[in-house]
Length: 137
Image 1 (cartoon, rainbow, N blue to C red):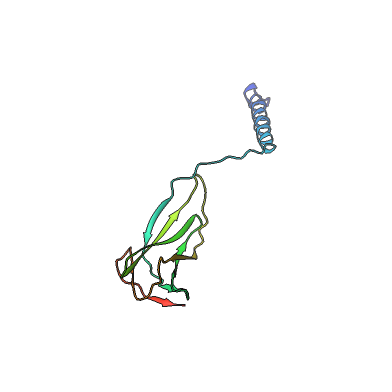
Image 2: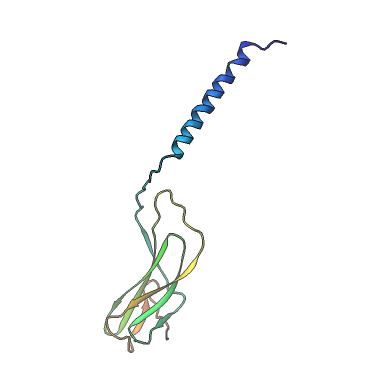
């Protein structure tokens, strides 16, 4: 049986396509270009302080922990009055467009430096409004 002209024509077209694609791939391999993607707007959420708080021996630094993932960062801020200290624990996600963040979770220690020693002021959680138990280190 003799091959028809239709059976012979696709082969050169496929071979040409393979050569062109291979050339593009090899050309791209030799270039060193850095693609920068803009960082998306960080998103923050206020988290309840569920793991307790620790007062440092100086009486002016309160520390707690927050579970964070690959592109996340925890932060502890506060507002003070003569009778209370209100702490806000926030979790901010910094993820660039197209970036894949690690799925592992770790506990980060975050601290807030008081403007004056804690003394006998009550410490409140801003997320829940409830008093926190603060242990001394």
